[in-house]
Image (cartoon, rainbow, N blue to C red):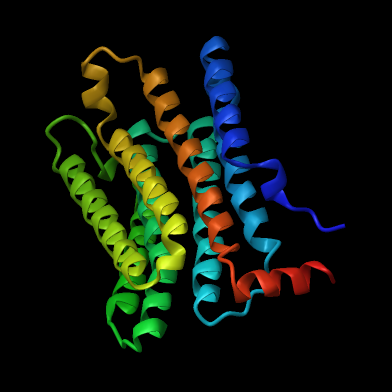
Length: 270
């Protein structure tokens, strides 16, 4: 019998799970951070989205396929970001600022990869030979080059108050998020059937962008008297929420109705 994740993980279930995680983390003191469980949970949430997509590998629609394939790749990047963050903190003992900078690099690369799927859809829909896709790949490669540089020379970045690196990351996050939301809105205006998918996805992008902003401004927030562990908790709670929204978005994408439901029934019966 085919497993249907949506029957288990609907919006109410995910809301309850997120609330329980917040309660458990806050009640445990520093355990979630010290044990690395906070990163493991992030990987589990990513895995939930991957399961959602991989259960639909039969989708060969010329419009949906790019979004699904880029979605899988983006989720893998987000999973790797938390694996890297865990080992950077627990084993490599890299400076906190370098770790947070790399988290931002991974997040922004992931958002751009997701956007590539949307661009692929728009290009086929409008028969457009836009240069956005190759440009996006170049920017994504740039983020991965930065990740490599920070591993080799973690002292090369500073997220201290007043550093231009902080403002650079805030600008990059704003640009990537704004561009992604703009392109998704354009897609919504062309394809009314995808409104629910896009609405969930935009909300997820906003939360992931908020995570990047918190990572970039951690020292500013700490100066306001917020404990660093609480900053880390809030950052990860928002990330869990973002991935929950991404899961729900793909759920809507894979149930668009009409011919898509007919295909779903056809393959689901096999």
